[in-house]
Length: 220
Image 1 (cartoon, rainbow, N blue to C red):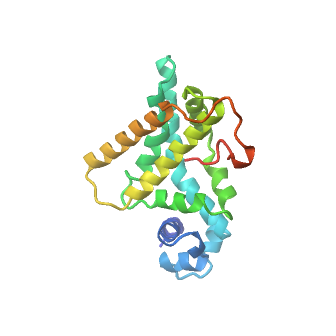
Image 2: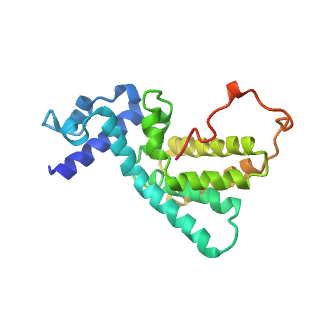
Image 3: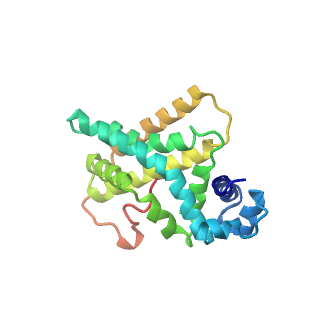
């Protein structure tokens, strides 16, 4: 097994362990065993540490997501007209859909669900998920949402989490390509509706800041 193949095998093993057993189950030893690595120092050689392994996995999966998202943003810019909510939601949703529901054997959305809620790794994950393309889409959606800025940011975070959890729930299930396409399209429809829905929050009052979250506290 070449170094490249060994590295890839360990990344896929780490993704599977976290997706199926949770972040606490991830150790370099278990990754080596799951990836059939006879060299006991293989994981440390390639990644340095558990956190380095996770960073490498996020970089591997988010590279295609960010590239496709940038393509969609560039397409919107070339049109020369203000983007619609649906166009921007599609730029948010469809790239991750391709890397999860569209990639056979993917466990990445389930990995994200586990990783995003692990306090010990939140900073590591967020550092890599906050790509420029994500920040741009988040900003556009917040601006396009017809609600006060703070609530608009909450709504945008809500659809991000909806996307991640929807993909996590659907990964690993038997689907036809037509069903996958329908799931993604319906998710886009739902996200557009969430952004457009009226709010019952009294907009004249200021919510208690102790209950607020970072407006960009989640990302994909």
